[in-house]
Image 1: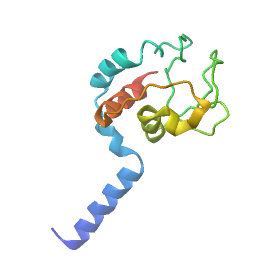
Image 2: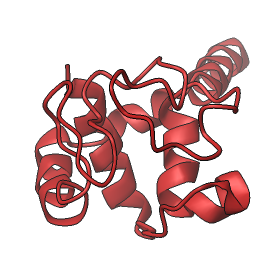
Image 3: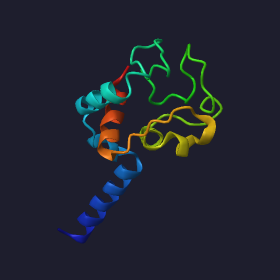
Image 4: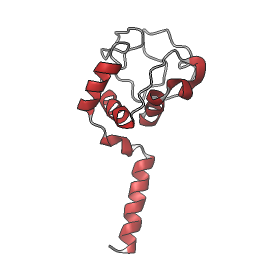
Length: 126
């Protein structure tokens, strides 16, 4: 392989990683299984239906703390967080570390592959 091709491939890889494309390797069907076991009890997937936590339907690209009809937010509604793969990964890994004391969510999804799969599933929710 020529030096030019290596540089082009390296640049493309760096751009993909920087854009969040690394998260595209998630499996939405496996994420759905994890979500049902770990998240669904508090976070419904139907728009406008809330439990202990808000519905997570159509959350990607939305400003945190802005789900219509859910008003129990502490620190999220005053944040500048936009839900994307990176922010959701940090949030699921450790909500208190990501946001501090301003959240009541204590559950941590420590397994990185499971987080990636759940994120892929959540991107699919409309």
